Amino acid sequence: MFLDELKNIVGPKGWITAADELEAHVTEGRGTLRGNAAIMVSPSSTDEVAKVVRVCAAAGVAIVPQGGNTGLCGGAVPDDSGKQVILNLSRMNRIRAVDPLDFSIVVDAGCILANIQQAARDVQRLFPLSLGAEGSCQIGGNLSTNAGGINVIRYGTARNLVLGLEVVLADGSVLNGLRTLRKDTAGYDLKQLFVGSEGTLGIITAAALKLYPDPGSTFTAVLGLESAGDAVKVLAVLREALSDRIEAFELIGGSALELVVRHIPDAKLPFDDSLPWYVLVEISGDGPGEKIEKVLMRCVDEALLLGAVIAKNDAETELFWRMRHSISEAEKHEGEMLKHDISVPIGRMEEFLRRSQALLAESIPDAKLVAFGHVGDGNLHYNLHLPEDAVCGEEAERATTLLYDLVAEFGGSFSAEHGVGVLKRHFLARYKDDVDLDLMKALKKALDPANILNPGKVF
Image: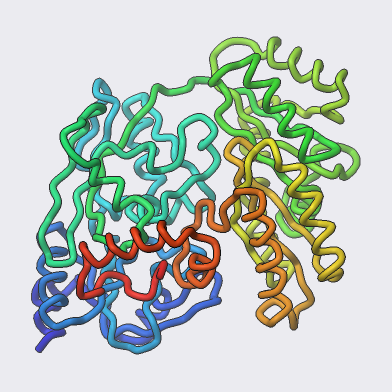
């Protein structure tokens, strides 16, 4: 009866129960987690989402909101009970409105990120959220994890790009907050409760987002460096000289780029020799790049850079970015990686890397570091290649705890942009202040007293 009610709400094209069809939706992208579900429903409207939630709430059945299921922490995967309902938003993929004069766009939560970017380009605007999975991830998932990506240095995380949200709450009521206002001090800013909450407080069904002017032509280069600390210094020099023209400043460890060259077709080292560190930098603005080149030469003269390779055309720019976005794919070919998504204060990144490598060399000498990330916001993807039998064992847990303890000592975060989900929830209690945790739990209880929205995630 319960399943029949859900099927009637979403119609014959809006549900699946067959195990083979559910498989991709009950498995985390890297295959590290697998659950089971009674059914997956795919509503086509906010009204259908609200009806599904009301039926589930009345039956006391838990709901797992799901977008593109590209997350890396299991936040969109059901548990193994086989009783939970996956609520997939992929059918809700409309661009509702684009207003180039207001610099805003209103979209359904199931819109693929790349399609939103294209809709902005179609009216000579920019939607700056950009990350490796943008061809398949959905904006609802991006917002629910407060995604970062490569352009945070100039535009901020997903949270900074939100003007308004439409959210279905745990009782099936709808928060209608799709305003595109830049200024509104009438009460609490409720939309920010749901950004980064991983579907545990409400189900985002639509979003009003900020657009920006088209940055025009860009200057792209790969820089070679002796240390990550030099990358921080180069970034400071560029920011002083170029203000907010820096669109991206991506740190890539030498071992990470070597993996790409080894496993990705057409990839090649930008310099004749392998270097310890690289930075992929993109700078916006029309006109010649002489000023930028002079700044880079100054960095070479001051021994902050070993050299620079400037993209001569769009094809080279595309190749540089394809190599950056292929790091995770290259890691898969190398074997299992112990992955960490951390952030530390930007000015202490070199000290952190030095301390962490010394700590791991002493405690887990077989670990090989593969690091890359976003220097401008202090976010590092600190991945370790361990012996095959250690990736999921006690050694892996020990390595992670050692690393996270050091991150905490530096005043950083063990979860910078991928969320907490299932895989990191036991670390939340270890590293979050009791007051933080109590307030988070109070919000959860107030908004979802029956705990039917993505239970087991975050807490």
